[in-house]
Length: 465
Image (cartoon, one colour):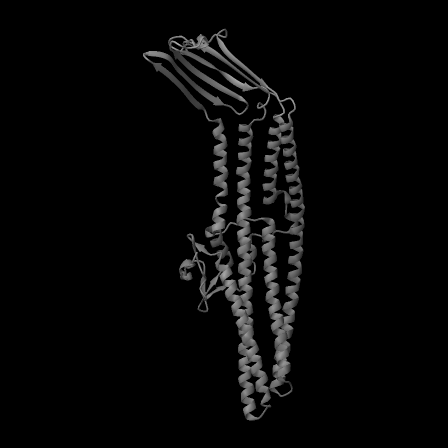
């Protein structure tokens, strides 16, 4: 679908602010728009209604049912039969159904057992399964599974939202990294050009050799190449970030003057809701992924019980009291009744035993998967905490390295102004400083990415505006 270009300031007029004639897109506000408008996030919101719809469908198996069966046959002026059979049935949670019935039969060719009083015959009774289907049946199992699926849908929604916010966070951090790197090359390109003009002027006055202007020009050209590569990377990361920007089902592209927040600080922790979450306070039992897998295991336990119930014989009984005057309560006489007993039992039970074994294997497979996931999640979270500590220490160290290289470069430029150094040494010092600053932005990106990994590992669904 073709992306439509919008004036971004209109879309973020409340959440972005002007800074040096540019617009700053804050990290938390960016995630807020992703959570509210991104198609995957909106798709995740369908999980709960789907679970509720499945539960409503399962409860439908216990709805009262009215059945009417009417048959009539007339031929050459003779009424062969006129049969009316109406039944009102109320299923219950266990294998019991309450029934009410009215029958009226007329005609010259009715069977003897179909002969009824002229005003019809009423009956009331129960039908139940005493063997297979009493403690566990399809209606009961379907309802239980639907309740579990509804709860699982809530947890799965958090996991889906967490995943899309994690990917959006990575895109924002990569965008920030590309922008910082472009700033580094833009600054040193300007420094190299200013130095080139100074060297060119000194060479024209005869203070230094004319060949030094060539070396200064080469430095400018190298910085230009580095800047062009950095700006190309910035454009790519900007487009990748735009993949997560949607407004009212319409994709949005960032304007060129929209910039990332350069001073994230604790904003990342606040937006991802990982601020003040030490490893000691983490509880693996409440992890959404494990809760989802536990619901899956509980559903398979229900399926196993249902398959085990299939090993029992089918023994269905029905008992109905008969009366011609249902309006009189005392008209129900135990001596007037209609009953039925149905029994069946497979001799080898091969199908039932096979289904039960398969159900047990599915349950074991789900339990193994859950146990493995529990260990993986625990170790992943532990690794991320250690990764954060390592990147924090490295960031402190590389910050000192940048400061030291800056001092060396300033000293070398001062010596060059006194004629005690050379452009080669200045370019060397400057190249080392550029490498250090690029390393600093790389470590910052890894540090923020590690925080996003922690956010994903904890499966947090943050409360965003």
